[in-house]
Structure formats: structure tokens, C-alpha cells
Amino acid sequence: MTRQEAYTLLTTYLQNKNLIKHCLAAEAAMKGIYKHLHSSDYHAETEELWGITGLLHDVDYEVAQKENKLDKHGILLFEENPNIIPEPMAHAIKAHNYTMTHVQPESDLDWAITTVDQLTGLVVSSTLVHPDKKLSSMTPEFILKKFNTSGFSKGVDRENIKLCETKLGIPLDKFIAITLSAMQSIASEIGL
Image (cartoon, rainbow, N blue to C red; front, side, top):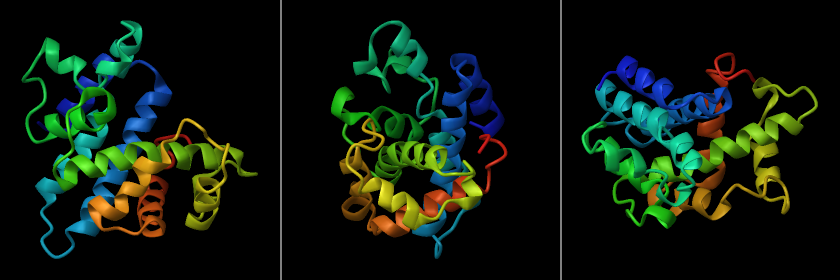
């Protein structure tokens, strides 16, 4: 699947501009995480696969929401069309919502999208409370402070984000820095 095919699929199923921006943020972050984990055995085509996984991880979200089936978010699209997204991307997308879908994350790809999905949301909410509301002004320290602020961005699953340490071997502060840097590189595309 090419990036263009993935983007066409995404915009076929998603209409909400903020959700599309979230998927773009996840795409950039997944590429950053791949580069960090595979600096010694880097392959451009694998980086692209990780990016497309990030781009498509929420492709069925609006359908699941509309049909009141958020417990199937991540697998709903595959029930209708099992081969719509190739493996291993399909497994990672199914597993990123594993507490609901019961599809267990297994690979680094699976765990990366599971953790980064939540972190991109925290980065955005942190940016929106910053005085200038610009990603370029964000620092990992500011986001970590918001991460540790109980009551801030309550919908973000911090325990999932912390899995970056045990499942990917990336310390939380480094994981935040990688994700932030990746999102800053596409700030104009996501409107921040």
C-alpha cells in the first residue's frame, strides 16, 4: 500500500478534520519512533510502513462512533473488508485499541502505535493550553509536566504511554521528545 493509497482510504472514511490531523501526527510520530529504534538497520520502506500504520490507525473511528460500536474501533473496518489493509499494518491497527478489541499487541510496530496514539493527543492538548498555542514553542519538559498533572487531559491513557519504556525500551522523556520533534516537523499540516 502506498502512502497516497493510504491517504485516499483515510479521507474516504474520515471527514473530521481534527481526526485527520491526529492521524497525520501519528504518522509523523511513528516514523520518528521507527528511526530511533532502527538507526542501525534503517530501511526507508519499513519507515513508510510504520508511517502508514500511524496514518490509518483511526480509519474506522467515525464509522464505529456513528454505529455506536466504539468497542470495535480498530477491527470494525476489517469485519467489512478483511483485506483492506495489508499485514503487518492491519494487526497493529487492530491491536492499538487492544483493551476493547482483545487483539494483543505483539511487535514493536504494534506497541508503537498503541503508545503514540495517546501521546499525540497529549501533545496537542498541551499545545492548546500554552500561551502561543504553537508546537514550535513546546518542549518535552512542558509536555512531561502536563503528563504528570492529574486532571489535565483526562481522556489520555497515561499508562498506555508509559508502555514505551517496557515494550519499546524508550524512556518516557525520550519518547516524548521523539514524538514532539516529529509533530513539530509537520506543524503547518496539523495547524499547530
